[in-house]
Image (cartoon, rainbow, N blue to C red):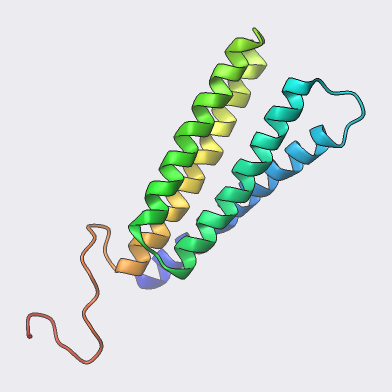
Length: 142
């Protein structure tokens, strides 16, 4: 079962990295376009920042595997989703396509969270958070 979890972790991490790359690509395409509104520039920089922070948190989780990375991705995802939804409502562009875009962004943020959670669970060996036994020590013995 360890192989399955490792494969799942790698797949989720690759999907998370692709989602972060899409955020960065979208933000850069808005920034580099010739005619954009100042509000769109602000939002584009916010999207670029979210993509870069997702890469950073993913890297942090792979290196340390601590609970802090899981809390950071929750905070980032919830904050970005609130700002994205309020920004959509503020521009009065909430249509069918905008609703689909909000759902798509939510799915990407959910994949990011699942990837970080899977990395943290793999690092701790169990989803419940039990620690791995130290090398050379049997379970139940001190």
